[in-house]
Length: 375
Image (cartoon, rainbow, N blue to C red):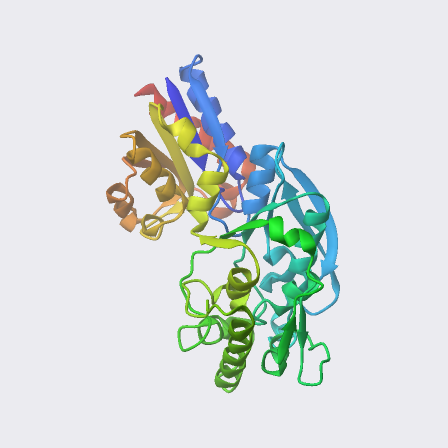
């Protein structure tokens, strides 16, 4: 029996690999000679870097970079083994969780630290990048990141603009002469699950700005400034990505990647499944196992477990899933390719006890053992 495991993290309880190891133990207790393949799983958002570092044996690179408001912050990224690939999350350097509610300041918040992470990886020899861009504190159109990579954004007097969204309407010209030369050889795969354009009522400022501190009064002002910035960029490069699906991601960071760097925006689950080469192992599997902390109707709308199921169904493979909890509307997951799913909690308990890592591991292992007695 060949079983392929790709389980998303049970946030607050088990990492992707820990959850997979628990299932693996349960399977091997019943089928000691089974060929069990364990792959990390994430959706391109928070925890993706950790999942790939742990699951693929990547080297963790710690680095101090410029935080969203200019103060130094600790960040890290992963170097995948035997490749020139770096995996990172923009939120590590410019994430909204790095700021308190009172500190949110879209006019000043910068992506400069994201560029510093990329530059550090480039200098270490990386030429391929997997980057998650969710959870940003910024609305700067990626200007900060690009500055760190050597691009210059000049005002009408030829002086460098300030940081953050306050710079957008002051950009008069762009100087690319000092950009990091290695960027021409780099390829960026960006995990992006939003389809918003850069500007307008469905754009970066109107849709995501409020959670970053953009007030109703600021919305039209910053959206107009973002449009001005886009026009200067489009005139410089003679191409227009402002209406491209995903250009508005991370306060316009998607737009910056598309215009200035060799980039593809890819749905997060697809990108991660490709990065861990899941399809190669799924092709001849007997059973595929997936799961996550909570399975509900949202899972069926394209979250990581359904991405795994979709890939397995391409080859007609049965898919089962384990979850910390299951809601009444989770039956939608059956229509999305998961043949059967099982909650792992074995009795009445508190949320705290259920999420205790030792309890979650034991519950996952025991549930897998019972299911695989039937298989």
